Image (cartoon, rainbow, N blue to C red; front, side):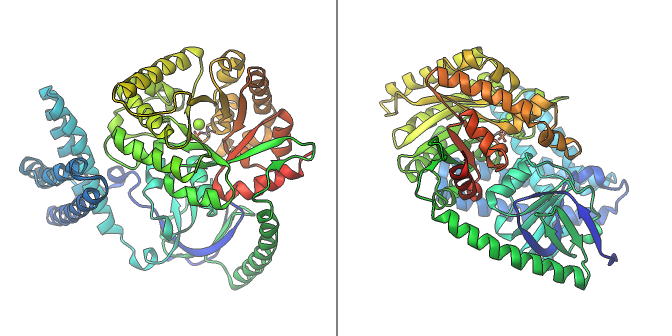
Length: 547
Ligand code: PEP
Ligand code: MG
């Protein structure tokens, strides 16, 4: 039992202070952390329990899926249920447990063997089932973990979530209503955990270094303003914390009242430069927050979030329904849908992207889309169809060359042709833009600007690639803050190029929300700033103070 107060430092995200109990995210690195000898009886029981729970969950999801997306799409869950009860798979798991393996190891071994057998048969349908087996195995392992680690007392009320790291797919699946704050051992202000925390408007502390799981359930004070976490605070620490929190809340309320008075006024600098204030979203639910905070459009819809939440490709119709709803809810305001940006830290199992030594420099963004043409085309057709219902634009991620834009344009034309044949309406003049996220795209911006309507600067990746600073690595995060000039020069170069070609430029990376850089960005001639909904008011206020 640990009781002495400890103080940890990290990088604070979202200027707030909260207190609550710590809850550690389990199931990170499952089988690797386990022992090597097990009681066969206990492991068999754990497996049976997990199977029962996983089955109940699958049937529950199947029922919900039928209601929401219809019978044929819900069939996948029936297959999952059948696999959970598959005799061969079950026997093989039980055999492995009897050989002395843990339930987790047995599930992994037996399911990989089974999946391999199906792939080796060489039949397309059976190969497709191999990824379902992997999915089912993951569900079983999660069910095992849940049974073992459930800490009801802590999990029933909102908590401060502590994790070594959070992948984007883990974050989209979190029960956000329960989270007071997030703490990660690693991470940086532009890592996806930080982005998610910002969009949820909750405080976070990243880069704290390892915290012992013995602190599960302990009381902690998280100060995202100062960048600290006090575990097991003394009475004096708790009182001081409350005093600062009360003072800060008062100032914040007054400032927010002032910012709210600007909400329906255009964001114009004192010298008359108008800046569009747009929102970054990852799903439809974020639109209400965007609109209530004065978003004039959606500058970045991270479309990959929908792909991360599931275990198989979304269909064209599912994508279309989502994009159409977003377009309608935004009521004629611009909605920029970034095409699938997976790879690097956003991995999706069913895409079967091979393991890479340097995923951030590997198969990601538009590179994936141009190779998985069927996946790309389904998404483009869905975006085009939605464009009929609002003001929708297409944006390509991770571009480095004209060739990638031209190849994407050919695919977009093919999709338009297909929709015309199907007699489906779309906006034939839909705008096309690219993300400026690589130094190459900024350096070549004079040529790229001739092909597109707009640029949007993804400073999270642009900083990473320009400064050779891994955006997930807290150890080197300071280099981004210290070396903004290199990145600003690339942005300036891109702004000049697109303006000379009659287009416009926005910034949608985290730099857009950094109020210490607003003046500089406006001076460069940035036409649009796109930020997480909780940051919209602050950015609008700051622009109107700029010279
Ligand atoms: C960026 O790189 O700045 C960006 C907005 O894209 P993401 O953070 O999703 O990589
Ligand atoms: Mg990016």
